Image 1: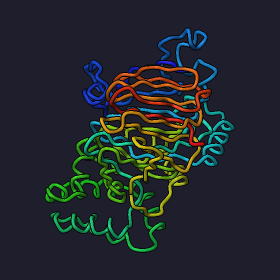
Image 2: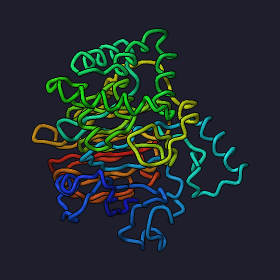
Image 3: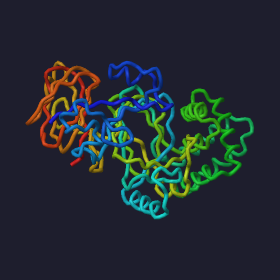
Length: 388
């Protein structure tokens, strides 16, 4: 069965006023449009455009066939930085949720870290050129070199120079210690942030200094400005995908993309925010192993189809592109799927149903359809489904 769905973009302050409307061919709201949610998550479940097909259910959360959908597909448009954050593993999420329940914390308590017992890995598919993000800790030696460049450009900067010297030693221990100190409320952290920002203004062509200036404009005085220099800055080009597993500290900086994640609300914040930061809990879920922020490799099971399969069962993303050379394609479905057309006008067909999607339109495809045929035009289709 094919069921047309839709939604209204969420108006978070960091959202773009034009990017989502420009992609989908819709009328801009006049305010920020940050995320368009396509899923059953109760925070903003997708609307069912023909409730007669769903027994009267007007959204996917209210329809028993999709209420437990394990993933959430989004269109995300960041005009400025999001908060630094990380997400727990399944084991950490279950334990944290049960612990906070035992403490009697209300579901909407501001003291809660765990809103549900699920993990929240995610991926982002870049549509803009570029899409910028912070992703995972880098080698502390690279961060030390960045801080030393900043120190050499500053007038004074004694706290900055001293902090650079602390970044020697076993990488995991160094990064953990630095993170705890930066977020721990020490009065010297404010001095360090001020020195880093002042030094960044003296290095106009330095990439790390550019990160500092960008973050200072959005969150002046925030310790996350310095913490960001312990992380990789990733620049994605259209079609590249960044995967963010449990424990990965990250923040989207700016750009338009398709985001796909497990359907969870569990977020541990680490700076660049005015919301609560639980430093001990954040540190307990973080992976302090240095990484290189490299794009997730795509599979190509058929002409016109790219698939991105992370190491979790909750979701995968297939991208179908039809043009003059490739005029049709097939996608093997692994369960209930959501399809979003971002370009062109495409005919979708399965074993029991069919539907035509134009730019900006989306549909849920029930699990009784095992193969999705796409054709009859040129365009681009994103298909989310479980990673079975």
